[in-house]
Image 1 (cartoon, rainbow, N blue to C red):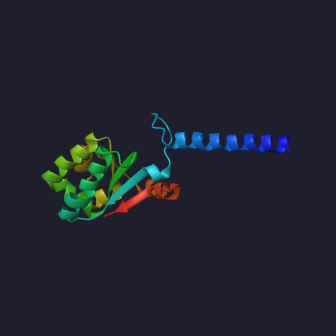
Image 2: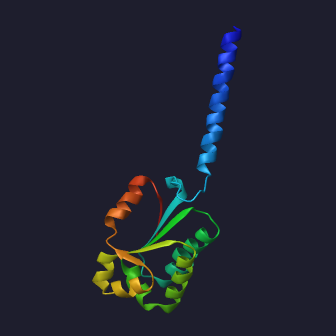
Length: 148
């Protein structure tokens, strides 16, 4: 009976140690560490409505990065939002603050080409590229997505 108790104790100890180890891995913020999908957010901004940009898309994206609510945030400018951003100086200034937080900002090249604003967006520091495959990858990897 002593042997079974000892084996049970050892197994319990190993399981507990494994759980503690895994918990430590989940909170590790070491540079280069692969983040879990639950720590990653894509803000998909599609609206051409200025109020949606100021009062939701930009406000949340900026604060989420500034206060560490998410470890990895990508803002995607898609559709009518690309046209709005290309002409609105206040939004452009706000976007610079977002970029300065380390948030990755992408724009759909297909959309921005349709509006004739790809160069203007690139000049703002946005990576302009065809985004459909990358967005699909984010979804398949389980990233959280906020669509506005």
